Length: 565
Image (cartoon, rainbow, N blue to C red; front, side):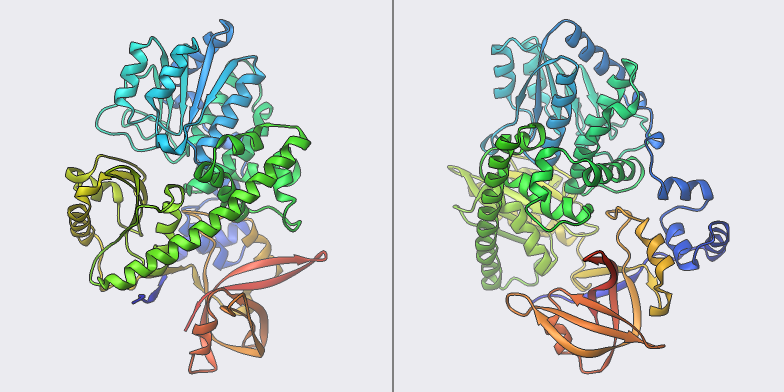
C-alpha cells in the first residue's frame, strides 16, 4: 500500500521585508519573497547570493588545527618525507584524494594513495597504517573519514606515524589521537561554516597551504570542479561556502573541464552542465567503480591527462555503470516483492535481507524503496559468515544516528549521516534488531501522515512567468538542499491539445497546459501518466518546476510537473 502525497506551502514570509527588498532590487515581489525565505534580506546578502565569488570564502585558518596541519605538511614537503593520502571509495572520498594528491604533487611532494577496497569497509584501516609503516611513510592524511578512528589513531602513534584527519562526519564522544583534526563539526571548532563536505575540507586545507606559500586563490581554481561534484553527491546544503564552490565548479566544468570529465560528458548530448548532471550523471558513474570494481578507476579519470588512456577508462566506467543499473533493478524488484509479501504495513520501517545481494548497491536499493513507501529503510546482505552489512536511508525528520544509538546492543559498528548510515550486525541478531529498530522509528514516524511532502514555494499565475522572471529565477541556481528548485502551484489549469504518453511503459506524459488569460506552456510529468488519466475533471491544480530547454539554439520554457490533483 503506497501512501499519499501532501502539498505544503513553505514557511510564511515577512511581507514588509519582501516588499522592501523588491523595491531595493527592482524585482518581482514573488522573487523577493523567495529570497527572504532563504534568509536573504539585504542588498549585500542578495549580491553575495546572486554573484558567488572566491572572496566570500572564509579564512581557512579559522578552522581548528589548521595551523598544525599546514605546518606539518610543509615540513614533510621540505624534508622530502613520503606522505600517504587516504580516502574512502565514494564520490566525496575519491574527489578529495584527487584534489589533495594533485595539489601536493604540484608542490613536489612524494605521495602514495590508499583507497580501500569495499571489502575493507569505510573508514581508516589498520591495513593502510601497516602499509604506510612498511613503506617508510611518516605522515597519513585521511580524507572524508577518520573522525571515529580511535583505535586506528593509537595504532598510527605506535608505528610512529603522524595522522591528519580531514572529516565532516559528526564526531563521537571522544576524538582520535591525531596530530590534527580538521572538522568544522567539532564542538571546539569555531569555523563559521559547518556544512562542508569531505572534499570541501580538503579544499580548505589546500587553500591554507596555498596562502601560506604566498599564492593567490586563483592558482587553485582548477580544483573547484572536484568540490562541486562532491557537494552534489554528498547532498550537502548548497548555501554559504558550498554554494560558492559549487557555482565556481560548474563554471569550470562548462568552460574548461578536466580531460577525463570532458570525455565522460562527450558520451551524452551537448548541453550546459548543471547540478543535476553532477548528481545523476557523474556521481553514479564514479560510485559504480567503487561499488563493482575498484575506485582507482575513477581516481584515474579525475587525475590523468592522457586522452588514449582516458578513453579506455571512460569505456570501462560506462560498462560498470550499466552493470550497476542492471543489478540495482534486479535487487530492487526482489526487495519490493519481499515487502509486499510481508504485509507489515503497520510497521514504521522497512528492513529487507538477502544473503547474495551485492554489497555495493544496497544503498541505492534502500533509496528506491523509500521512493515507493517513504519509511526509514535498511537493506542487508551477507558480508562474511554470520555477519550482515546494511545500508540505511531515512526520511525527513527521522535522524538515523539517534535511532541507531538506541539499537547499539545489536550493532557491531555503524556510521554516517542522519539520513544515510552504514552498519554491521551479526546475522543471529537480525530479528531482534528489526524489532528494536522499528520501535525506535515509531517514536519519530507518524504513520497517519501522508508519506511524502512536496514543499511549495508559492502560488503563481502563468502570466507571472515572463522572460525577466525566468532570468532571475535561473540565478537562484545551483539548486540543492536549503536552496531547492522552487515548486510552484498554479490552480484551475486545463489541457489543450492531445495527451502524449511516453516512456518504455508509457508511464510519463507530455501535455500543453493553459490557464486564463489563455497563457499556455508545454509540460512533462514523469511517472504521472496513470494519475493524469484518473482525474475526473478537465480543470486541475498543478505543482511544477520551471525549466528552460535549449534546442537548436532556441530557448523554450517547459514545466516539469511534480504532482497534480
